Length: 242
Image 1 (cartoon, rainbow, N blue to C red):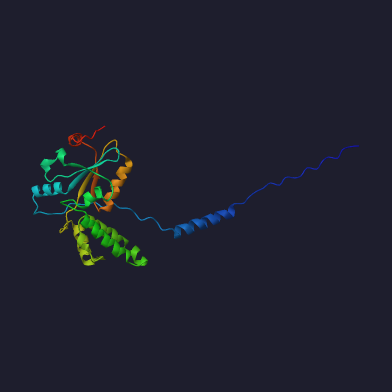
Image 2 (spheres, rainbow, N blue to C red; image 1 turned 90 degrees about the vertical axis):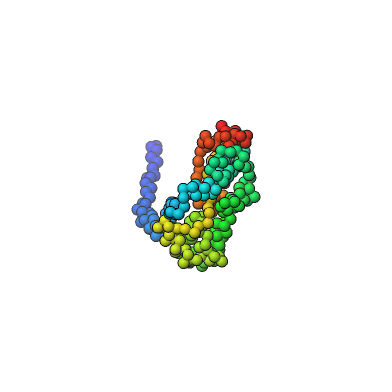
């Protein structure tokens, strides 16, 4: 008796049509493009020297020396600062002092610098923040550029743009105009900070000291390398240089 051939099932080809997904993706892309807020452009403010024809070269040099502090970042989280009153004193190791991190250490040194205390700037920033935070949410976004511009003014020493936790718009407009024309005057003394990390210092300490610059409203600071003039100051105080 002949065997019956087993019937083979016909395999159906599976096909997924993604054509409708194209339209959906285009709708989603369009939706996110229209609803997403774009990032604001970040601009770096370039601080230009003010014109002062009445100041002699000797006065400028003295002012620069008195208002400059050098900070050394060493190994084992050690921190040193160097302040001199006269240019001729640079290189004298006796002016190098050790301090600690935080509010009671380097921040206190910057706040109460004898020639350019930053506490005046910090107090002005607090008043500016109080003015901005008191604004309704709908007005904060509209005044965001004014706030950032006012912060630049405070870091340059124009602390009189705020008074009694309010922004003095008349004074703000005048300072803004003078800054654009490079004719600004009547500024409180501001610090210039030289940050010099040693080779064996940590990256975390560098980030921390940059945070202190923002907290203390210091607008003039630079990260520099150790040079030959720094070596005697450090070695005389027992700081090894690798």
